[in-house]
Length: 252
Image (cartoon, rainbow, N blue to C red; front, side, top):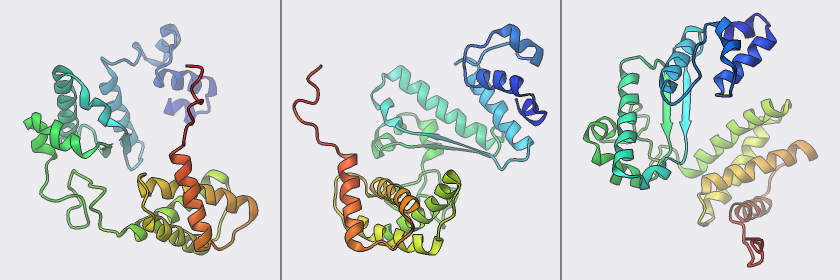
């Protein structure tokens, strides 16, 4: 796939891309490229290992793999739970042996996962437990506790907002006044950190901030006032917590 891209063979690139995404591609079309099997559960991890090794070989810094909502696995049976625990242990070991070079795995889990699930698998627990959470004093700690970070909420959200501006600029193909938008991010961060809603304040900030950036791109850049920031937070809070009437699900 990489070679087809570099050589400008667009049709070959599309074919191999479909195969890499797990789509049903006729094996007869893949054999000329030296491919003799589809990606499946049986060989998926081997394929992943080859891919991350190739990324390093091509000169990229590495690969980041993000997994969300792992808490769905909290209610699985004992057998399935052991499989999950053993898979995680293997991932840790392969990274430690450099068979998954320059690869960062991040699993989003609730606190219950570390308290109630991982301790049932001693081999995994020994690899994941750490006396301190990730911080500037312990940069190699495995556990990132989102409630125990080095930065205070306002500073954390302000820096997050500034980084989102860069992403927004690249996505929209525009350039914004970074100093102005950083100041706007701080105003919104202060109001967001002071608000007490049930929803996580970081998620609320990102929702409101991205909406605000779209408004800035469309209407022109301007300073954000405290009252406008509070209104943005309120609208974002309502969007994340929609209120359904009794008639919303009549068809069911």
